[in-house]
Amino acid sequence: DGEERKKQWKWREAWQVLKEQLTLTKKAAVEGVQAIKLEASMYSAVIGTPGLISLQYFVDSLTPKLLSSMAKENFVKALADLRNSNVRKITLVEFDFGAKGPKLASARTYNLDDAIALDIDVDWSSEMKAKVKVTSKIGVTIPVTIKNLRFDGVVRVVLTPLTE
Image (tube, rainbow, N blue to C red; front, top):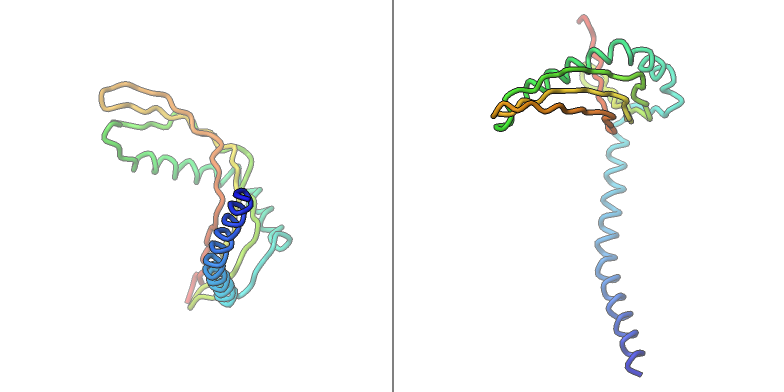
C-alpha cells in the first residue's frame, strides 16, 4: 500500500511539472514560429544546394589557389595580433591549406538600399595544417601544430555596384 502511494505521488508531481512547463513550452513555440516568419519575410530569395552547384564549382576551383593564399595571409595577421602576457613571439613555420574546400549548403538573398546581400551557409572540415613556433616570455620555444580546423556558419557576401 505504501509503494502504491509513492507511485501516485511521483505521478502527481510529474503531472504538476508538466502543467507548469507546458505554458512555457507553448510560449517558446509561438515565439519561434514568429521569428521564423519574420526571418522569411526578409528574404528576397532562398537558394538550396542544387541552386549553388555553379558557385560550389567556383569555390572548389579557387580553393587551392586563391583561398589558400588568403587563409595564410589572415592566419599570419591573426598570429601577429595575438596578445598573451606569457608569449613573446609566435612565428608561422609551415602552412598547408589542403585541397578540400568549403561546402555550400544553402543561401539567402536580401535586397539592401543600393546592394544585394547573400548569406551562404558554409560547412568546412578543412585539411588545413599550420606549424608555429611559440616563444615564451622566458625564452623557451615550443613547436605547435594546428590542423583540421572546422568552420560551420554563415558567410555574408555583399554585392554593390562598381559605378554609380
